[in-house]
Length: 193
Image 1 (tube, rainbow, N blue to C red):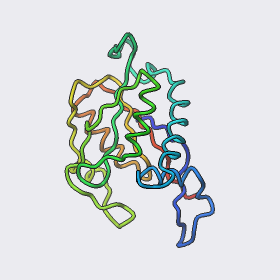
Image 2 (image 1 turned 90 degrees about the vertical axis):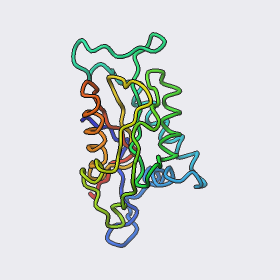
Image 3 (image 1 turned 180 degrees about the vertical axis):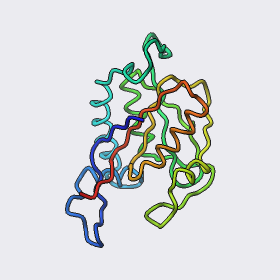
Image 4 (image 1 turned 180 degrees about the horizontal axis):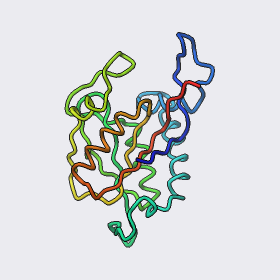
């Protein structure tokens, strides 16, 4: 699976100290996780702008086998946008939902497919020592699309550290929809360099 990251994510703490590389972009990733944060709207605007600029230039057909017919909506090819669910059962990130709704509204090729991926039981966060293996994710996420699925799917998550949640969701989607191609999109890719 190809995966685009808006930028690196440097953890807030490194060896118990505040990480000097933790910047505004990283802060916005954390802010986007909680709609009650004072700068939540600015974080949504930040990532919406980055993703709108990036995705608008994508030639969508490059990810599909020659001759694949993207479904059409109002004469335009379109792509389903699906969100990796949070670690809590039934929860999806408010920030990711707002960001991708905004991007989808501005790029008519994209169509939100909310609730297609659902966390069926809580998983402990990695930061709290939880097991975040691909299998743990696979055992706690269900694919419940409300309608037919497009040939191309953008799978969106906030932070990619191991990639296990993206891999698990991609596997789940492609088991149910083997003709679909999945492309990952993350707000930040964890790096420690």
